[in-house]
Image 1 (cartoon, one colour):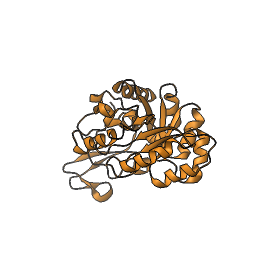
Image 2 (cartoon, helix red, strand yellow; image 1 turned 60 degrees about the vertical axis):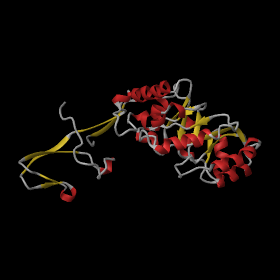
Image 3 (tube, one colour; image 1 turned 90 degrees about the vertical axis):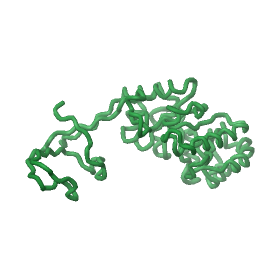
Image 4 (spheres, helix red, strand yellow; image 1 turned 45 degrees about the horizontal axis):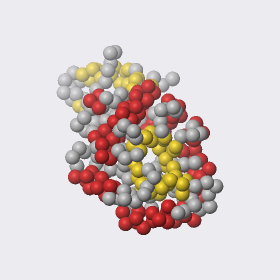
Length: 291
């Protein structure tokens, strides 16, 4: 058996979700569990948050189906919407909250015959310029969607580009862009990612979307997770499988990237990029050895 173990602390994930909720009193929170809960195990994370989370956010219909199989009542937000029109019937069958982030998705939804209406989240491109509709397009399509039989709730959502860089001018621009549309009668609104819910109360709206913070990582380069009250959710442990002496001038590893400047004792653990440890990770990562 390979002596390498990633240990997940589910209690830490619950703590971090509760912290997110305390940061935004009275708001509801989608726990972002896309990409196998950021590699932490979606089944285990959803089970741990089963009675805590107001909803879950995922990136694909397959992920949504997996979460729905574990939780028949939770709201499940499909963050990028359906990738093709033929996914819409399954989205309705699963009872998803559906993001609509472009004109093609919008027209496909309005043309679809669904077994039940969906909670729709119009995605506003407030300045990230990756996905979303312009403010003008949101205004134009609002009345069509409000009266459409395919739509239950009609909600507004956007995403920050630089909220993790405190004081970045684009964040204020994006917030203003979002607020300017709130004269429209949306049922629910969501804007804050981890960084915004920790630092920008004006962005909290009705629903917050904690992602990276759930897993104990800080979104800020200049603030440690412990300073924010977050608990790390994953620890990686391995055992030394070799120890050798290396003379000055000899190199170690791929690309001869490290060269001994003095007689050195080199330990090797059974962990590499096939295990998810990136080859481009910089030298100097601290390790605990024998405590």
